[in-house]
Each structure stands twice: as C-alpha cells, then as structure tokens.
Length: 165
Image (tube, rainbow, N blue to C red; front, top):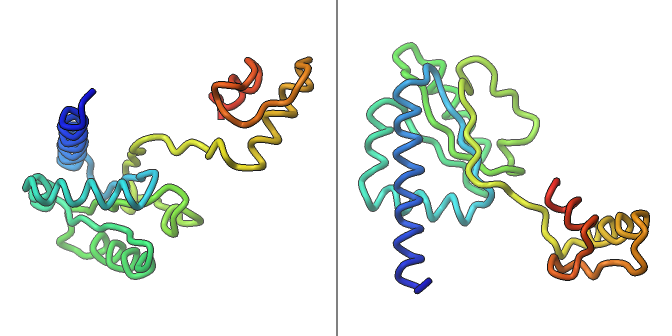
C-alpha cells in the first residue's frame, strides 16, 4: 500500500465515521458521547471533519464539545449547561477513553443517550506488567520458556490472552 493510498483510506474512514455520527445525532434524542482511543486521533479527526465541512451537519442539530488534555472540566460544564437549557436539542461530546471525562462521570439521562466507541484501545505490548502476565500465562500453560513480550514470539496461550484483553 502506498503512502498516498493510506492517506486516502484514512480520509475516507474519517469521513465515514463523521457521517455515521451525524446520522446517529439526527435520530438520538438528547445527547451522545463518542470516545476515542487517543487525543492524537481525536485532534486529527476534528481537523479533517472541519476542513471537509462535515462538522456543520452535526452542528445543525447538536452542539459539539471536544475534550482537550487541558480543559476537560470546563468542557463538561458547557456540555451539561447546553443539555439542561430549555431550547436544547442535545449535544455531542467527543472524549478520550481513559481521559478526564471518561472516569467517574455518570452520563445518565440526557447527558448520554448513546455512547460510541471509536477504535479499541489495546494495552501496550511493551508494558512491563503485561509482559510478565503473558510470560506467567505461558509458564502455567506448560511452556518451557517465558515470552519476550513481542506478539510474534508469543506462545499460543499468551497470544490468546493478549487478544482477549
């Protein structure tokens, strides 16, 4: 796959995701929350959606709020205030899995009538805790040696554990 085709695929994926969110926001009463695996991906998606003019589709029905690594408390206040206002048609909150807004916040009632997960945030294979866990799993499964933490060199039991996390 060439660099150009990868960029085109990423733009198409980005556009399809945004159009899907726009369609969902048209039929979901109240508000929705979309969780992304990283700030980097969220920022990239937002830039692409804004540049393509697709973001305006959702803004017609629902206000869009984006969590940043520095202003999550203020974003939640604005998001909540928008939903509680009498003339509100709801809002869309774009947040990060494991970020400030995904932890210990109850998105009940109109704060989150729908939740969308974008991508699956996998554990880092380089994490020392995960490497040890995978090695232990192989040893108790009867393997002669522990794994080194690289997927290609994992035994079948460690690979099964990692893929099920």
